[in-house]
Length: 495
Image (tube, helix red, strand yellow):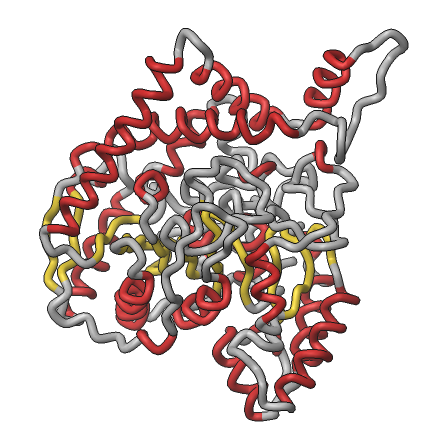
């Protein structure tokens, strides 16, 4: 079989079980694709030795007949996950040279299930960004192009390297994290599937923290079935994470029947934004029609506090970031600035952080420190927490009224060019998260499914939001949408 790297997880798993291919062959195919794709800047720490060693072990396991679904499947790991003995920098200069002595729970669970780590993937620094332009490694680049235009496009952020690598078939799937849309927005930009599970479904232990009450890991895959397979391997209770739930993890793949007859799908009127491109509006309407044709009932709903979601998010997330990033001080690990004679500890902190943190991270830390400061805590942070509760209650009320899932656009536009929305107006960049942040504020599961192409031939995604802990049901609705949409477009190879 040629082009083994183009397989999805389910196809590759079945080929491995049938003996048509070995994990070593799959892994070598991906490693070659990675080496040929430096122009995408998706993989930033390659680990071919670890990959081949794990692939050989996986082949033995498969022969012995003791192999879980992920066994032998080559994947990429976002640079936010600590991986033992492998650089884990969160794409920041301040963690230069940091090689953890431990493994994050999620990457350990994937390793235990036999998955093969190909290397670490590019991302926005500390997961702060929507375009993968804040990384110390440089921009990740989308494999997609606009028509005949050679302009480099963003793969989205913060999981831009993961999105680019999966869309370009450099790996079969990848891990991502989602604090305000960082799995779903890049997945929509590059035409792949990305699911953010319910807050607490995947352990956060060993994942470099951005905003602890919002961060959640999830899979980025080539289709919904693959997302179900990988999510099951990533979930589970972890006593090392106090927010991790003790719920049993179902067999998500077995729940993909495609039958959504009688399901109630909500269409929130508040997501009809001023200035929304007609293509997105049209795609959203088509998505609702597809679900209706599959037997679901489409219901207009209201989520009245949606308009406060972005300002709420951009108070809470930076506040938590400023608290989490206080540990990066140049004392115990990572980068320390060169000090002049006579410099004390204050100068060391100042110089180290000025050198180590990029502009976007500095901006958010300063905003966060400001909203937590004595005179402003009640005016900003406390008020944002109260509004967050109202946003969560909007969803609770809708689900209590019998809605099974909510359909919205995933992003307000298709992918844009690198450099088109840079530092001149950071707020413009923040608006990219307008459809996704509510899901993190409410702790709900959300999935982005590719649903069409815009006039320039770029992918557009639709988002489904589910009830808490019902990822299986959400994946099944997404599976029905995917089947009806029949999206199969791939980027033309230019790299």
